[in-house]
Image 1 (cartoon, rainbow, N blue to C red):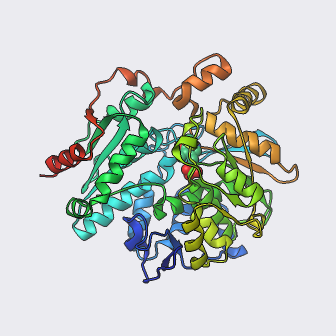
Image 2: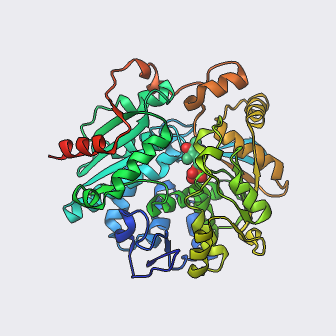
Image 3: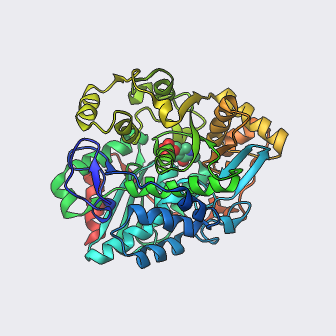
Length: 465
Ligand SMILES: *Cc1c(COP(=O)(O)O)cnc(C)c1O
C-alpha cells in the first residue's frame, strides 16, 4: 500500500514510513493511494471471524510492509479479553448490546482507560515498540491532554521499550478520577507534567517545543495525536465487527451513529464503507460545538477559534477544528489535492455543490439538556447507563433513525469517567469497574510546572541523559 498526502505529495511512502509520523512533509494528511475493495465473497469469509482475525484481515491490507507474522503477533497481543475486560462480554472485545429491536450499542470503551481511544492506542503502543526496535531508535512522545487522550496514550505506552511519554495536563483541572488514572502510573517511562494554566497553555507549550526543529530532531520528539494514520485504520476494524454482529443478511445495510470531535472515529467508518462494507448511513453527532453538523447540513465549513469553543458536558467533543476532516474532504472533492490546498488556505469554505450524502453522511447535534434527557431515557427504557458522549450519538441516531435499517450507536466512553453528569441526570453515581475502586486514594506521581517550554525541554533533556 502506497500512501499519498491530501495536499499532493506522493513519494511512494509505505505504512512503516508513515507509522511514526504526524503530518506529511507538505502539511497534508496521509491517505492510502486507493482503498482496498472487498468482494461479497471476502465479506462472507469475514462474517464469523473473531476480533483478532478481523483485525488481521483488515490491517494486512493497509500495513502490507509489516511481515504478516509480526502483524498477527502484535494484534494477538493487543486485542485480548484481559486488556478489554470492562464490558458485558470480554471475549468479544467490542460486544454489542441491543437496546431494542434494531437499535444497538457497540461497546468500544472496555479497555484500560474506559474510552474508545484505547481500541487504537493499545495497538499503536505495540506497533511503535516493534518499529523502534527494528530501527534501533527511541522516541519521546510529547503531548497535551485535557483527559481522555493522555491517559489512553500513557496506558498504551507504559513500560514499552524505546518510548518515553511526557504528558502535559492543566494542573487541578481534570476530574479526580482522570487525574488518578494518569498520576498513579509509576512506570519509569511515563512523565506527568501538571501545568499551572489551562489546556490551551499546555498545547501552546507542546507547539513551542515542537517548533524548535533542532531540539525536536535531537531528542526524537513524536506525537500520538488523532491524525496518526495507524490510529484511524485500527478503528476501521470495529465497524466490521459491529456490522457482522447485527446485519440481518449478506449485503443488508446497517447505519452507524458516531459522537464526533476530531472526526477520527467516523473517518474510520467512511473508510470501512469505501472498502465495500454495506454501511447505509454514517450519522455524525456533535455537541454544542457543531461545526461538523453545520457542514453536513449546509455544505459550509466554518471552523472556529478557541474563544468560540464552548466547554460542555461532553468535553472530548469540544473541538471546532476537526483534524481528520481533511481526509474526508479529499475524497469528497474527487482527491483533487490542488483544491484541498486552496480550501485549507482559505480556512472557511463552501462546498454546498458537492454531495456528502453520496458517502452516506447525515448529521445532527445535541445540547446539555438533550444529553441529560437521553441518559435518563436510556436508563428508564433499557436499564442501561450511557456516558454523555455516547448520549449525544444516541440522541441524534434516534432522531435520524430509519425503522427499516438496523442502527448501531458507538459507545465512546463508560459513564464512570463522567460521574458528575450522570449524577445530574440520574441523581446517583455511575457504577465503576471494580479494579478502579479507591483509585483516588493511591499514591500519585506528577511534577507541577509553569507553562514554559524551556522547563519542559530541560525535563526531557534530564530524563534522556
Ligand atoms: C475522543 C472522543 C470522542 C471524539 O472522537 P473523534 O475521533 O475525535 O471524533 C468522542 N467521545 C469520547 C468519549 C472521546 O474520548
